[in-house]
Amino acid sequence: MQGWMARGPCRPVCREKSMAFIQATAAFGARASELLSADNARPGRQISASQAPERHIIVETLRKAAPLLGLKPTVLATLEAMLSCLAPKRNHNMVFASNLTLSARRNGVSDRTLRRHAATLQEAGLLQRKDSANGKRFTRYDPAAKQAMHFGFDLSPLFDKLAEIAALAVQAEQTAAQIAYLKSKIRAQLRPLLQADPTDTRGLDLLRRLRTRLTVAELSALSAALPQEVQEAEDDRLETHVGASKLSASDGQNVRHHQKSNKEKPEEEPPSQDKPAAAETLSLAELVTACPEAASFSLGSIAHFGDVIAHAQTLAPMIGIDRATYGQAVRSIGALRSAITVWAIVQFHDRIRNVGAYFRAITSGARSRDFDAIRLVRRLGAMAPA
Image 1 (cartoon, rainbow, N blue to C red):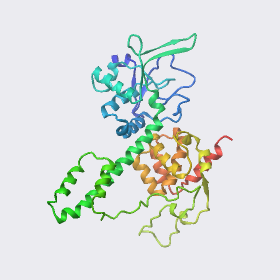
Image 2: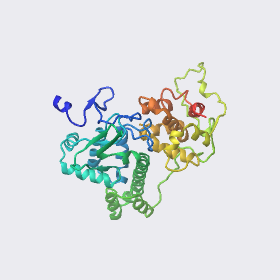
Image 3: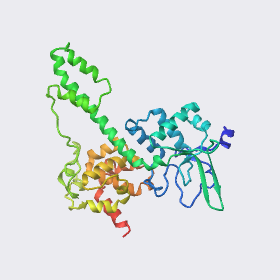
Image 4: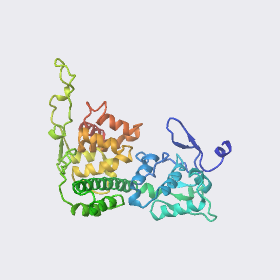
């Protein structure tokens, strides 16, 4: 173990507190005045040094988007091994690790498998190979000209496409949820038919088809051909005012639900939250001005609050807010307030130790009673440079 720690292009030191790989040394000439953290992209790219997500968030986002990217789990495991070999302080995203090191981090896969996975990542536009004359991976630095040459696996394309990949991850999750919904609907449509005739050949055949991989279009066609006796209701969990130009702090449908306990004593004074609050509104322009970092990650224009919600669903996994936590926030404070809370957190998430836990606490946890998303955005707007 000591020999392995003493040599090799990557020297991981695992600290129990952070449980993250920390590079002991960086390649010669890789230290610059504008440096990156262990999992960040280069300055000037779409993902800035202070706003880039951590490695485990990048990998989780890639796993969710994998069906649309066409990447298998084994290829993602190789990419994760490459990400773990990035230097903590660097001005590039080059992986210098040898095949032996990468193989060790992939539990002993062959060089042929590594080359095949690298080619797949290159075809997917997530990696660029920069080979040296002898095929080795290293860097050369000219102190006089203050220039460096890097040879290895360049992961800059991956960091450049993080926002796009996050959008694909959201799309893949929505597609999976839609497929699960349609399968449940078809089973409900088939139930009365099979109860009337358990030997119905058509119904049994459709049940068997549901076990295979079907697209949304195929499932929709199957459902349309069956009796439409299943009652479907609109989702009342989301806010309906997404097209409004302003968001009100006292909008009736968006006010939190307060559930009274049977143990409540009649002589106790009702909580202060039940008292009517002063009306406070937030315009879309104010949100974009107060949260420029979140707006900069958008691949399209933010024209209305519906775009704000859609963009927040992309941003949430990038900063460490999982789907369950975000869904609980939507049920607690509404879709729009959850979205603008994510926008606000993007501005200072690098100063939060655990973004997911913080978001849960202020939206549906112990600190949610006194939290107001609009006031948070207004405070950020007041601190924004003129």
